[in-house]
Image (cartoon, rainbow over all chains, first blue to last red; front, side, top):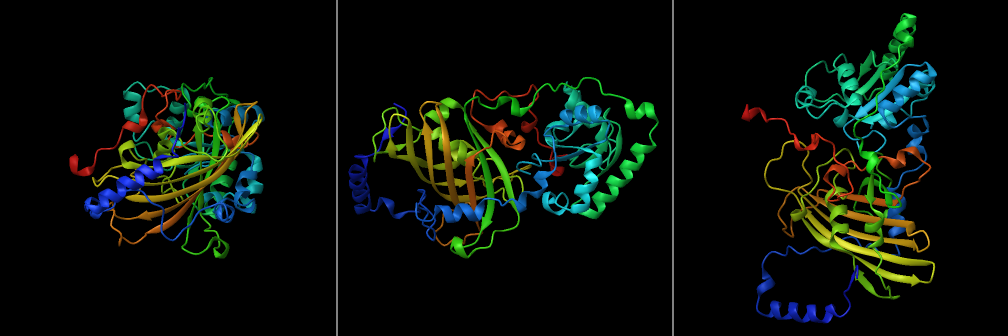
Length: 98
Length: 345
């Protein structure tokens, strides 16, 4: 069994929470995770958020250049093509998270 | 930033045809914070040592510290020019100077070839076969509805990896349409620790497992003999340490909300569709106080990486921090090393 069916836990959990609230146990700072109050991310709007976050082809114009993804591959290709190597290095791969 | 300010420049793109272009991650190549300590500790990866010797002649000189930037060298690794700049004009001038230096080289130097440079370790070698390889896009958002927002021009990319076994565990063994299941906590933990980070404008540190709260559930939308369609939902809070951290520290606090859809193909044992959107609120304080103002809104989008795209096979930036036995670690773990703070000298 990889995943645990959480149906059925709802009623039990609700009952426990109600009892705890009744004795004031949950009146301290709420550290439990809960969704940001202003957003409602669901099936009706996730595509709009996706379209806002994901990149356009224009934003990725620099990827049209023929980069190779490592220093050692670049040196090998420079030797084959008899060209100088231009190496771009950053904290985090420049083609990834940098 | 340089991706757009420099490499989208038309003159640079034209000039770049006279070079072979390569990009790489510098922390590994430079052997951590100080290459001299790396070499003294026995670090001798041929690819890294070649870079360290070349970069010692470059714009940041022979000492320790970052070696980020743009270098031009011969195929044997002899430096011709270097710079670290977001100015297309400055980079173009460096490229022109380097090209002139290349053309002025004696033929023997130009034709010199490097000794075999087979690296001892590269993170991409741990890519999980038949696993779930996701491309991640990170961008700051505003409080407005998505339809009314203009995308923030700066964004970032990363990649998230799950082994075939880990990906399979997103699907229950006997799925019932309409039922909701908790995803094994290690799946959410990896996302939250290593990927739901404040990295829209640059690298950010990871969270520890005990700094993560939250979960992810899967609802079975449709299932037949060939495919299983699922909906993903989750929420969480990640809270960084109050202690001052040297090096990269994660955001003080991030609250997240997750929603996605995916399709698992039973014949291949892999996901053939996957989309996950995560909206987050960044706080500058660790304290979970209701009145604490939101510092920034941020969004993450995960989708299947393109196996035909060479950069979609780059390793996750924080693969070194994955809690996964299938990740091969290097002999010298560079991410454990932090420079000594000046006050401790």
